[in-house]
Length: 90
Ligand SMILES: [Zn+2]
Image (cartoon, rainbow, N blue to C red; front, top):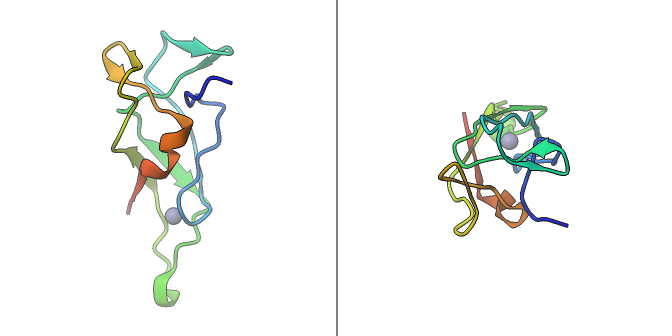
């Protein structure tokens, strides 16, 4: 299986929220689905982050690190093993 994330992949924030995956990439398809790229920003739904009982859910996931070898229109692609590199913005 190709390890590049696409809009059909599942990406979660560290607290179990689900990222709604969209991409600006329309060129590179993997198994028919557009691949995600480093510059994509994904809304998060269902985050349960509530430190000390204060509900502060993640609302966006941004990517800090992309693939070093695979680029789409000069933007690094996102790999499955980089999933933990997703950061949540509140
Ligand atoms: Zn979260």
